[in-house]
Length: 384
Image (tube, rainbow, N blue to C red; front, top):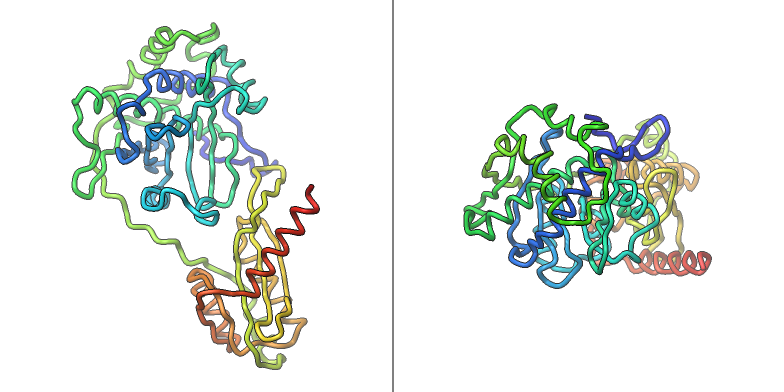
C-alpha cells in the first residue's frame, strides 16, 4: 500500500480512490446508525493498530457530551500524549491544538459540508437525510489545518470505524468490561498479512452502486464484504503507551559562517527571540498550514531587529539559517538571548554556545508578544 500523503513530484495530495471512499462511507454510516456515543464515554479509550504501518491509532468515541458525534483517532505516541492533555485540560490553547495528529469521522448537517464532501457521498451512491447524519472526514497533521484524507488515511479510518463498532458493541452488551487494565490499553491488531486487506479497497472488489440509505442494507453490505471474511484475524492485545516528549529539533548550519560571525561582530546587550506558529492559515498547492514565525527584538531599545515567516515542515533549519544571515550582515551579537520556550532553548543551545551568547529562559517576552499582536492585527486588516 502507498503510505504517502503527497506525490512528491507534483506536491499534491494523493486522494482516495472511489473504492476507498465507498468502504469508508459504508463503515461510517454503520457506525453512525449504531450511535455508540449513547453508552460509551470519551474516557473509554482503545487502540487500533494500522496493519500497513504498525502505528497505533488511539480511538475516542465522541458525542456523549452533546458535541458533534463521531470518532477521533489520535495517531501514534504523540497522539496519545495529546489525548491525555485534552482529557486533562478539556480545551487546548491554539499552540497545543495545532500540534494534533488526528483523523476524524464526524456527522454534521448538510450545510456544514463542503461541495467536495457532498460530491464524495454522491459518487459512492449514498444519500443522507436529517440533522447530524452527513459523514465528514478530516486529517490533521501538526501545524497543518484539518484537510481532506489521503488514500491510506481513508483505508485506516475505515478499519478504525469497523473496529470501533465491534469494541463499542462488546462494551454495550457487557462482553467487555473495560478498555484499560492498569497502565495497559486494549488495542485491536490484525494478525494476518496486510496484503490480505488490499483487495477490499481495489476497484470492482464488490458492488455498492445503488443508493444505500437504509441502515439494514448498509449493515449487511459492510458485514458481508469486510467483517465477515476477516473478523477472525483481528485480535485483542494489551499495550502500554510509550511516554513521549517533544523531540529536540536537530538543526544543521554552516559552521564556517558561525565562526565568521563570531570573529567579526561587536558584542553587548540583550535580545528577545521566539519561534512560534503565526495565527493565520496560509495555503499552497498541498495542505493549508500555520506558518512558523521568527522574531528577534532588542529588549533594551524596544526595536524589532529581524522577522521571518516560513512553512512549518523544515522551520527550524530555515529560520536558523535566516537568523545567521541576519547576524552576518548586522555584525553585532548580544551578550544574552532570552527565550520563553524550552524547545528553542535546547535547539539553539549549541549554536549560541558556538557564538558565545548566553541563552536564558524567562517567563515572558513583552517585546515579542507586542510585535506578534501587531503583525496579526495588520495581517487581519489587510485580509478583509
